[in-house]
Image (cartoon, rainbow, N blue to C red; front, side):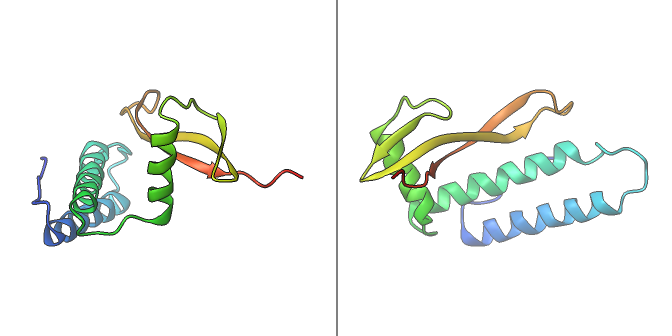
Length: 123
């Protein structure tokens, strides 16, 4: 069952509590089916992420420094590929990706996390 919570701070707290309950239920499950709650947990995680992103866009939650930097770098280098290195404001950064969600089998990545990693200064 998929729950959709309002895009409010209270809705975010409700969504987080729902996710915690599902993760707790999954950790206590002894049915021998490791994927029993997989779909519900992934849906709950996506709902928490959706609400969090919406609240940040509305200005109700602050962006982190890394999120602000990622946004500025994405605007400056919109076509950057994975592991591409760029120079920005006197520092070097590398575009990085990691799987955010995978298919039920775990073989297919369905969405990606992406960020910019600051590289050490080269002498």
